Length: 76
Image 1 (cartoon, one colour):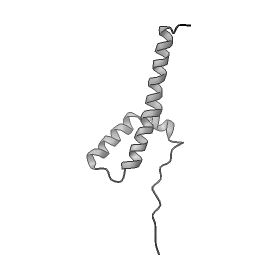
Image 2 (spheres, rainbow, N blue to C red):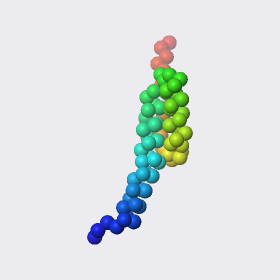
Image 3 (tube, rainbow, N blue to C red):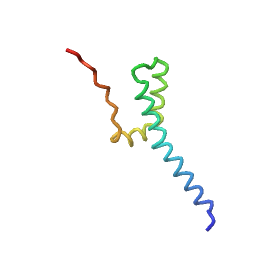
Image 4 (spheres, helix red, strand yellow):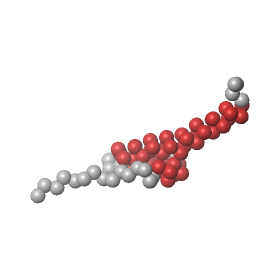
């Protein structure tokens, strides 16, 4: 069965929407987790830009991801 043009367009939409809603926000989350406490002001501005651009995907992934700060080692 040959792939029709309509099926190809539907597949393209599915791939692009999956990339926008899942892959890009996941990469942004990982980058934020790694660089949040050591980022410069310009880098932080770029971080905020990517969070703004991928906001629907961030909302979609937020219930499943939880990046809390690491526990401090308190020696008494």
